[in-house]
Length: 157
Image: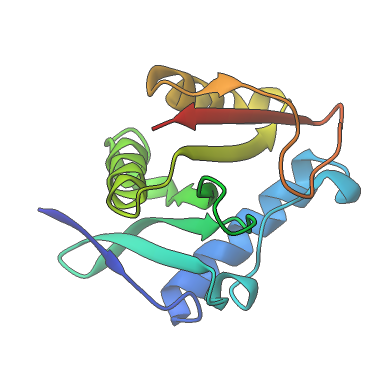
């Protein structure tokens, strides 16, 4: 049975998965277009980080970053560091993680969830996953700017 729980991004197996994630991002996108976070950044107070595990084995990870908004404005969040281990791909782990993140966002009364992903073919499965779950393309959000290597997506909750 797969369980999703809050976890420490500096935990050894998670740290390794995040390093693989960063390496893939830099291998597929120009450095200025890589917005993935390392394990230190994922430990920030504004970020909630989860892992998916089965019998203790790491299957994937994902995070929700609370975006800053002025008092009284709607609350928004950003999905960060969605990653599945190579051995777990095709098992629905990303769908489970995304569902968990969205459930958490709704429980926090967030009104919108955003994400940034790449335009390269490597990112096509991620774009399809998000589109299947109701995300649509949108303009850059938060601190992002237009970038030909980025696709920005949002989901209104």
